Image (tube, rainbow over all chains, first blue to last red):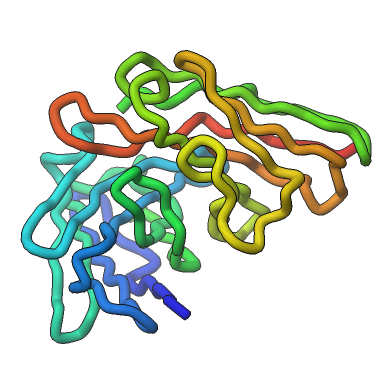
Length: 119
Length: 112
């Protein structure tokens, strides 16, 4: 059974860079059959795509966040990471990693990790 | 990233049917049969309940069904049950400059 688990700091300061990691078990991120991505949800608000990658070097980022985010991949550890720079309070929320199909439906989700941006 | 439009809330009594709409544009919902729906209970991760407009993942109740007409997709929950009380989000594939996904604004379903 495929499982995804996010990890990272719960609290970060404004203007700093957030680093999150998604550890994947029960399946490989290198199979080349699915995309892997990040989604976030501000408190009490809706879901927002951040970005995705397809093994082989294809990366997609939501236009509104593209200048501040970057996804990297560690195939040796079967995990992928997200960096979000120049943080503001608006970046506070639960961050999910997930696996999605080419039609962009997410069939596996991590449990989510809460990130608070505050001094 | 312009979100898809959903009603903020929908309610119904046990046993009734309710429908949630999801309105996009000719660049997303209207252009592709790639609409998905998610159920989210408080404090939990979203759960996929419909993909590719009207397909259900294994294990999802047949009480959930999806459809699409033009730029608007819909999720129908029939035989409403107490456990259906949750937030529901639609999502669509969109490819304007690059491929991306876009979510709906979310709908709170209340079982009266």
